[in-house]
Image (tube, rainbow, N blue to C red; front, side, top):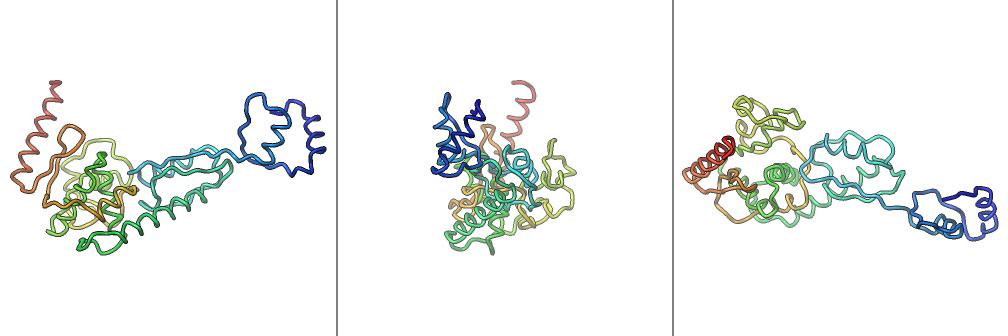
Length: 266
């Protein structure tokens, strides 16, 4: 933007009464005059960049996103699962990764506090952290927004009945040691003794398995009203729900037939 450095220096000196020049990332219109450039450097707003943390990512995935985000500086602190809120965050060039992380951490604390304060009565959850753990499971179970309260209700009903949650995402988290599992689950995975294997351990796992968004937090604290205890994929991206094991087994049989037909190219 400055093709005549000496002239620019002179213009800066002559107009110094208008204020100091500021260091930041600014946007300049094409063909901007020197007066426009000086005005932007003095009164313009720095460019607002944005970085999005999608729902359902692990701490490792989030760290990778923030680590490669252009314009952020410094190191990112090591952090646990589920402590940052998936959201789009604005930042300016030169902001620190640690500062953005603290904002995302504070946003999660706020969102969790609000969801917990507005929770339904008689939930089988004792603390906000338990709500966070269950919300992380719900987040990983479905990508269909309207299903979240219903899936949350199924898990809450299972907790009330002292049934295992039997959530595949928790088994995958255990099998990959907190990373992403790049293969289908096996029988050995389901049979493995591990604190996050909710097929083997009743109740909630000891920690979140991902970062849940606001909608998932609200789903587990204000779940749907239903007596359903089961769900399975329905072949359309959503799930088929059931109250009884007999009904669930029929849904499972339909899903297996869909998988068989897909495998055969039908």
